[in-house]
Image (cartoon, rainbow, N blue to C red; front, top):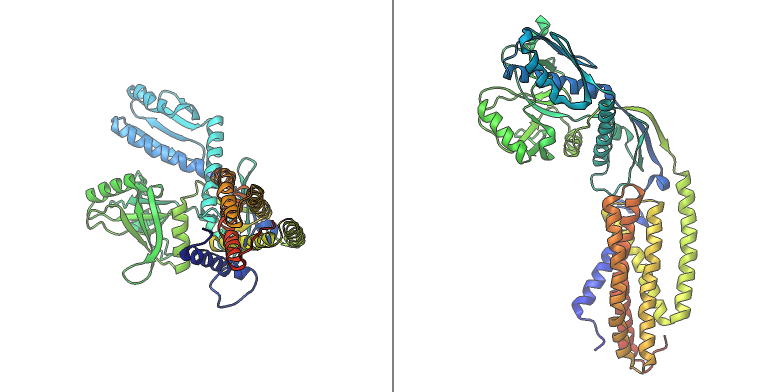
Length: 513
């Protein structure tokens, strides 16, 4: 029997109204309306253009400092006497006190592999990066920085910033339709390297400042609150920010902005071990080499914690975002900054409007001439399809670019193609002598399998493009995937509902299609 259950009719109407409600901000601007319009990409709306430089020298210096501390620990574990262990911007060096320990020293240094050049004589040892080791470090640093920048600017994968490597140590960033470029620079300019290190109790910060020296294995750091306070903390990082699982903005017991965090399983285990063994000692929370706070450990702490300080709500939100995205492997310097005007985008939008209007008129005219009243119903489904795509893009706050528009155009063709398949199937059933209702039922049931196969294979391709693509490719896949789903809805459900309502109302004896 040719009918639609009441719940199906209700569901179709609700989906159409929801799509219209979500897409409405793209047509009219109402101050109190809760929805948002679709974000336009850099090629349509303009935006910010930044050229960044990764400070590889600081990475080398930090890496050598970590190696120096590792060598110190290894030599002490082997009970080797040494002196003058230090690191600078290009090497680590130390002197042996007892030449008899040179063989054990050589065994320790041999663990560093081909990335380093190791120079030794009777008592002196010097380690520095080899050319291949430096190139590998530079390449890895820039690649990691690109990934972290993408996570900070586009955590949901729908904003489509252009992030590309330029040369050996430069990164090009283009952010579409940005309202606050200074905030973007602040997000990218912050390394956000979070570490937890024990405070050295042998000397206070004031004593270290006055004497001009710190105990071996420790470093003097300033407070992040600019109150003049300083801390002597051990160089050894007990727990690092790369072990964070989540970070979110919140409030402390005094209702002041704070950042709540939790560790992954490895970080939680290490954090619990450190805090359990050091009850009564201050534990410094260090962000970008500034001590945010140094609370005293009162009891063993496991997976969760809170960072408090002099934060505003916006700062706590931004800090939580960059901590979730991860620390930049190197500080970034803005070499070039400029705003890109939407002139090209305005031309593209205008040309797109003209092309869309002409295309819709031609498609609607053709399908109405070919299938009559049923072509008009398919045309109504085509309009609903466009509304649903715009509504979905608005809800997702995805960025629409020229490749995204191409995805929409492609799905429009697929939506028309689905209706053509259905109507041709109905024609075949009518030629076989079936009645009006039987022809419509049989036409839909026979065409659906073909339509589903064609659309599902395209949907799988769009999913793979989204997973493995980036930038404009991902934008194309988003609009294509949404368009496939909405075209299936309009072709199989919406247009069919219109046909069922018309046939039940008119009860035609014959079907001219």
